[in-house]
Image (cartoon, rainbow, N blue to C red; front, side):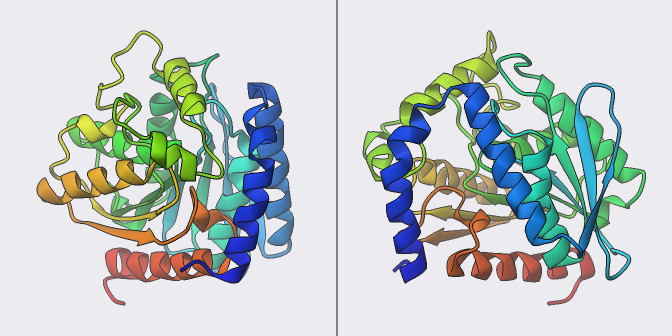
Length: 298
């Protein structure tokens, strides 16, 4: 059962959904950037940001001011591969730096349709290699929501295949792991107060371009999932990507790559970002998971 605050927020999302779905790509990007700036204001004074220059994309470190971080998070934001720029990435990235007292590399990977696959994956790999210059792999975790969650699993497969040291853990919320979208998700779409099937199919086409959408680097659900780091995954029952999460968790566990899946009743897409009681509970679970996987104790 969702909390009262979450129920009220969900109602607002439902009312706003037709307006959100009517936004074009540029307006969606501006909306996300505004949300990111609001999140940054919430941690101002406790987190400072330091630009990390790359030739093809933007990125910034979020550093907690109270102590020297002992580990780092590579944060890959959501936005269906078509939205989410640096200010948005710094929003939740800054919140995680504050909560976990960790260094967070906030990555604004290149976006489709201007930069389709494999641009986002190439940028994520370059950012991870930069993080490895500052932290040992066992002191790094991948974190991502929605498209960024799927990108975390594609990146992990890429690193394994290229013999690049893997991180200690992967944490995802509502990961988009199957851009093929051939399953029957119409009922899930009716429940989802934020996403639309048509919007996701459009973004999948924009990102995949001429590539097969079952390519594991695009849809990690179809990849070889053996030998990946332990995962913690969150999803709500009332979202179109719930089946993505359930299938991905099952396939990870079947491949011997342990994944703990948290399915939250009555919650929407990427609910961990929204500051409601359920998201605070998820952040605590993430903290405990990181403590166990990176520091070796609960």
